[in-house]
Image 1: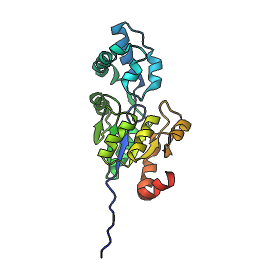
Image 2: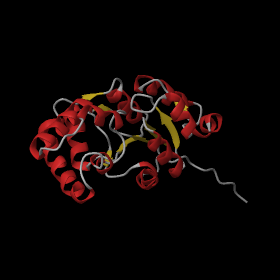
Image 3: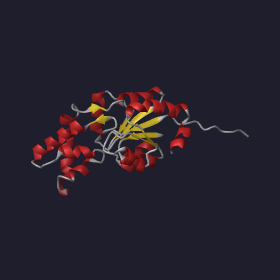
Image 4: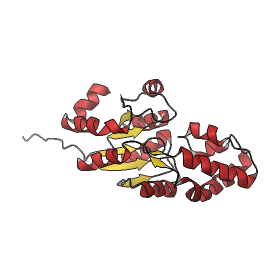
Length: 220
C-alpha cells in the first residue's frame, strides 16, 4: 500500500481594483462630471466617489430614473477612457504587491466589478502587470472567477470583497484603503486586515514560508 501526498496548487492571489490597486477617485469624479454636463442631470461626483466598489448601475440609480440607467451606464463607460485613465494613480505598494506574488512563482489576477476593458486600460497605463483580468463581478459573484483560477487569497478594500473571498473559500485579506474601515471589514469576516498593500509582500512571504494551510488555520 502506498501513501499519497497532496501537492499544493500553484499560488494564485486575486486583487480587487478600485481603491485596492488603484486610486480611481479623481478619474471617476471626472467621468461623472462629464456625464452630468452632457446629460444636464446633476450628479454629486464627490459623493459618488465615496461609494466605490459596487457596480456602476447602483450608483447611477441615485441620479437617474430606472428607465435610463442602462443607457447612462453605457454612455459613462464610453466616456470613461477619455476622462478617467490619466488622472488615476496606483495605490501605494500596488505594483510591488503584484510583483511579490509573481516572484514567488504565483499568479496575480484582478477580479473587479469594473467594465473589463476599462480595468485593463488602467492596469496597462499604470504598469501593473496582472496575469489575468476578470471584470463585471461584484461581491459573492467574484467567487466565480476566484474558483475558476484556483485563488487561495483575495485582497480587497470592501466588505463585498470579503464576501466574495469567503464564498470562494479563499483567504480574505482586506486593506482599509477604500470606503470600509477596519472594524467593518473584520465584522464582515476578513481573515487578515493589513494597513495597506505596502505590507502585503512581507505577509505573503510569511504565508508561503509557513505553509499556506497553517497560516490560514491561524487566521481563519
